[in-house]
Image (cartoon, rainbow, N blue to C red):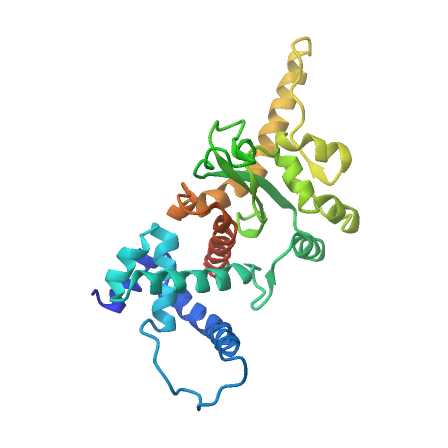
Length: 304
């Protein structure tokens, strides 16, 4: 069993010690509430013994948090984590399920606004309109395991772009590449614009008329429906266009790409966590995992 100090190092967890300490302070209370709620349900009523009585956790909260971060960062198997922390694999599995859910519920941090976190797309649009921020939106795909033969909906996960079974995440970032929000994830076959519409982006555009979102060519339908707010690159000139027109449009596309590139940097920050490179676990748990990692990345970018 390795030293807890070594396992809590940034090399293993992906977060600094100061960040880890703030997570411990923030999540200890909610975790204790979850544990007490589960015990209350199991007892069927109020506790009959004093607080602190009874068996102790073999894996204390800090170790549970560290084990979850290591799992998210390096995709280390639960059995291997059990060996590192000196507990059974089932204990690690239960701990990761608890902490991962708490991390996902936190939402994304807001720059220079301690304590304020964005959890919905409407929150992001309200924040952008209040602060005068131009948003960047893009989608990324995470490869997942192919559904079993004979199971309905197998084709829904086949990405037309990657030719693989994937799930699609829609990300919103600001002009500095800081993650502000991620959606609940959709099957990879769904079009990028459709995924954004299903998250209610059309309603957000109508309610927050001053917000502009930079998009790529995959969102031309949004530009058509919300002109002046959904901003995509200028269309390429055709072959009969004068050379000066072709050159002007090419420069305009480069300017748009240079402004929108920050959302690509945000996506690259997410993919540094191994679990988002290729998901080998149950597809049902990928959305909560992605939201947990996005929240952690937003914390780091806010405090850096």
